[in-house]
Structure formats: structure tokens, C-alpha cells
Length: 375
Image 1 (cartoon, rainbow, N blue to C red):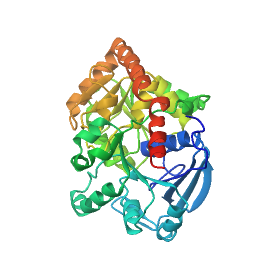
Image 2 (image 1 turned 180 degrees about the vertical axis):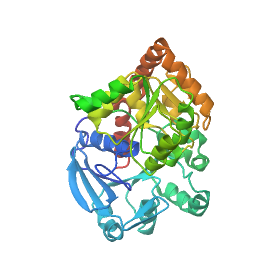
Image 3 (image 1 turned 90 degrees about the horizontal axis):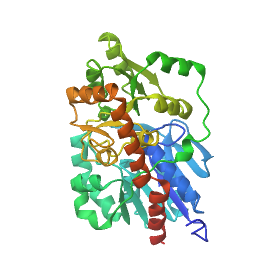
């Protein structure tokens, strides 16, 4: 596939946040799609919003962040993006939207974009039922306008009601892991190594500390867990969780805040398992689960009807438990804490599953074929 495009093809991804401002699973997904496209000779730009307008190049991808003037219900808006949107579209051959971000979707409709549109549908709107009701007519408009709708798992396509009338234009492309991300990374500084040694036996959560991650359920479960829990990430819930840990004297939970890849690699290598106790289908896939598979670690996840239960198979690569159930969560974690044999078996199965379904070679080419089909 390398060099498939003789003329420079311009793909523009549009999403509310991107590196280096934020480091979430969706940003990592965009990064991997963009990186794979660049390797095929495609010119790629990522347009996002930020607290400070800036431009740059990251792994061969042009990045442009417009100043975010305000935010409503986690939806940032930029007057500058509005001003430059027509120019962005004019310079692009294909627009790649990452759903949901109402600002980009409404601008696409407002300017009646005629260019081919790829829309990667990461999840439905779940936090606000009122917002969803008001916004649903526009969701249908953008789904109708999109040339191709990409879903990250068959589970997501089959369990999302709003997608059912658009199944004819849906294509499934699983997320994947860029193994180069962890190659050549040196060990972290000695303080992290000492901290990990002091913590001892631990399960690991990595992610942005958002409402749907189920972290309060994790704290409840930790009280009846036979090992320690390490929480890595930043977000609006950080202080709330830290206060709970202090007030309720939950001595086996350690919050390490945001960490760079050298520390993440070390934590993944040395953990017993990873845990993603999400409580809403807003957790549509769980990029961190692929990282867990790569390091041959078992997983504990919740049944949400999304891609998390496609990555993690109950009884094969880890445990899938009911959401919002702290008792089931503590039981699953305890099973892994006390059995090295189960951990090793699940971990090896997880790595095999990664190689079967979630590699760049198997998945990235599907996006390239989609782009080619739209020319």
C-alpha cells in the first residue's frame, strides 16, 4: 500500500482536542490514523481547539489549534475556527470528523460542506439526555451528509440505536496499537521505580478522569480488595477522588496524576492487571485496553455493549462484570491478585487477541481504502 497516492491527498481531521494539550484515547486514535496516512504519502492536518492558538508538526502531521473562547456542556467553541472554517474546507480533499463534537458537526452543516466526509463514530451522546434530545435532529443531518461512517467495533454499531438507519454506509475499523510508541523508551527516573516498588502488588487504571470512567465505583471496590490500586491520569474528577481517598482513609489507592509514556510503560510492565470500570457506553472502546494486551496483562472491564467487550473477552483475556457493581469488581480484582496462573493465561490470550484484531497492518489499511474510494 505504501505510496498508493501519486498526487498529494489532503485529509483534515477535526476534533475539539489534540496533542500536546490533551492525552486521551481519542487523541491517540486520531494520532494513529494520521500517522498511518502520512506513511502512505497522504498530507494530513489535525484541526483542534486550545487555550492558546498555535501551529506545529507532530510526527509529520500538521497541527493547528484555534483559541477556544468558551465551553458549553463539554463542547468548546472558537470564533476563530468559525472565521477560518471555509478556508480549512477549501484546502482539504477529505474531511474526517471525530464524532461527537457538536461544534465541528454544526459548522459542517452550516457551511454546507461538499467535500467527502468520513465520520468516525466513537460513541453516542450519553451524559445529557436533554442535550441529546435537542441535538438529535442535527446528528441525523450529519450522518446523512457523511460519505462513510466508521464505527470502532461491531458491538458499537449493533447497540447504538441512532446508527441503525445508516448501517448501509457504516464500515467497521477497530482501533489499533502503535507498537512503535513504546519502542526505545528508557526506564523512568528512580523516584518512580522506588514508588512502584513501595506500592507492591497493584491493579492499574489509566485514563482521563471523566464522569463515565466509574472511578467512584473503583474506590468502593478497593475497600474490599486484597491488593493496591494505582490511578494514572488527570481530569475534572481528580480533586474529588483525592478527597474521598483522604476522608475515607482508603489506604490502598494511589493517585499518580498524568504521566508520560516512559512511566506508563513501566507501570504497565509491573502491574498485575488493568482495570476499566466504566459506567456508560460513552466508553466506546478503551484504547488503554490495547496497551494492556500489548504488555500481556489481564483486564477487568464492564459490560456496556461497546468495543470494550470485544477487546476483553470474559474468561479468556480477563473479566467482564456488570457496570456500577463494586462487589463484582472487587471479586474480579481479587481473583487476579491471588492467582499468578490466571493472570499469565489471560495475559497471553490478550496478546494473541491484539495480534489477531488490533494491529496497524490489519486496521490502518481499511482507512486508506476508504479514502481511496472517496476519490
